[in-house]
Length: 164
Image 1: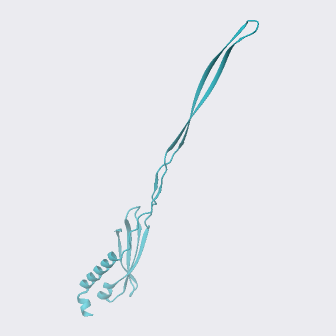
Image 2: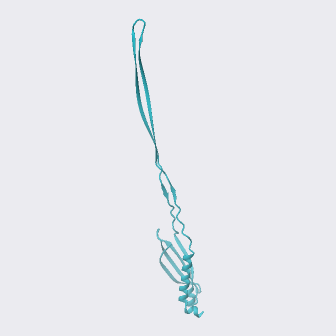
């Protein structure tokens, strides 16, 4: 026990280094954001309809037995009407990204091991924080409560930066 009390700082640094190493080694993989892509195209259909009216006029020459002549001529007229129909379909590309809102706060509970080594008292650290807007900053309040002699030891107020 005397070695622990003598080298408590070095042991704490080694313990924190081990915790940081394990946290970075076994952290969960980052999932890519789900992306929904909708493809729409602009299609234009053009129909060209041509109406042709053909008018045939015939003129004939008929000779009757009494000697009279009837003249008849053929004349052809064509009338063209063009009608265009346009049908449009609009197809666009839309990309929808779901926006994941970060959690709005955090809560933490811990026991202070240095208080036991230093004063032989159990001290609990309670904490909580609220996110400041849509930023990675949290406003945190962490009271330290002595559990051996129930009282409030310290209050830590600060701004925490969340790093993913």
